[in-house]
Image (cartoon, rainbow, N blue to C red; front, side, top):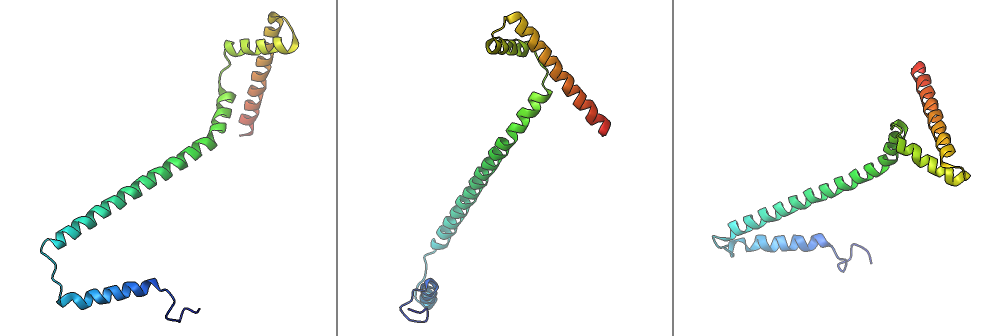
Length: 136
C-alpha cells in the first residue's frame, strides 16, 4: 500500500475534517452564554496542572543530577579528608591493635611501631607539601 491510496490512515486528515465540520456548523450552532467561561476555566486548570508537572519534573531531574554529582565527588572528598585530617591518639591506638593482631606482638611494642609509622607518614606528607610549595 502506498501513502497515496485512500485506505492509508492520515491523522491530520481526521482533524481537518472535524475542523471543517465545526466551521460549517457556525451558523447553525449557538453556544450557551456559560460555555466560554467554562472552557476558559478548564483550559486555565489544564495549564496550571501542566506547569506543576513541569516543575515537579525539573525538581526530580535536579535531585537526580545532584545525587549523581555527590556520589561522584564523595571519593574525592574522602581522599582529601584522610589526607589533611589530623591524626588522633585513637588512630594510633587502632593501628597498634592492628599491628598486634598481624605481627603477634605485645601491645607496647605495637604501639611504638604504630607511632613510628604515623610520624613517618606525616614526615613524608610534609616533604611532599614542601616540594610542591617550592615548585609553585
